[in-house]
Image 1: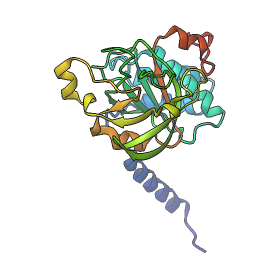
Image 2: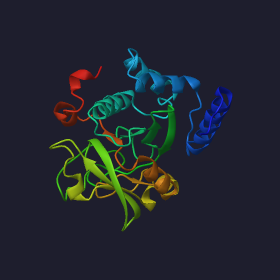
Image 3: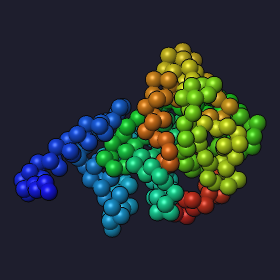
Amino acid sequence: MLRLSVTSLTTFIARCALVLAGLCTPFVMPASSKAGSRAAHVYNNNLPGKEEGYGMLYDELQLDTLNLSRKAFTYAVKGYSRLQAQGQLQNDNVISIIDFSLPSNKKRLFVIDMISGKLLFNTFVSHGRNSGKAIATRFSNKPGSYMSSLGFYITGSTYFGEHGYSLRLQGIEKGINDKALKRGIVMHSADYVEEDYIQQRGYSGRSEGCPAIPAEFQQQVIETIKDGSCLFLYSPNKFYTAHSKIVPRRTIG
């Protein structure tokens, strides 16, 4: 039987931790703040300071400077917390937020590592062609509407389709986005959300309702959030806030 001294075991664990840390290095927009990690720790361990942890994480990642609405973030983490508690998330390491209160010439997709407290990605994302031009103001759950659908999604499996590597999205809010799979709403890449395209026109092109992202981040983002993570599409939309049962309006300050 192999016997390890306490010192040897400690050294082995430390080396493993270094290896894992290297594997988990974020691709984009790393937030190296130790305070950010403390905020994530407060959040993930369900301590009495959990609500404080929400605010800490938002502040330490300086998400306001990246234009992410605090209300969008608050909705997202509260919904994530509820889905996590219900055991609905197979991949609860990350949360993805699309903030449609921002125009499409802003980087409005945010992917956050809830374990390390780091921002992994911040990039452009499209909305549906009938949701609006530069900013999305109209939303629908109907097939053929060519609009985006707000609310909480759980990411599914990947496949190679018309737009290459793509990610299925399951809408879990009845009457709001639960027809997403039927509508073929997936995450994929598109040239009309590339930075050059947006700079030339002042806004991104639009999809048939899918959250399309730049090809540069297609593989990395999809690999990070696939297979059961939480994705939240936000807008200060009165219908959504009145009808969502995942995060009732009265729970948002």
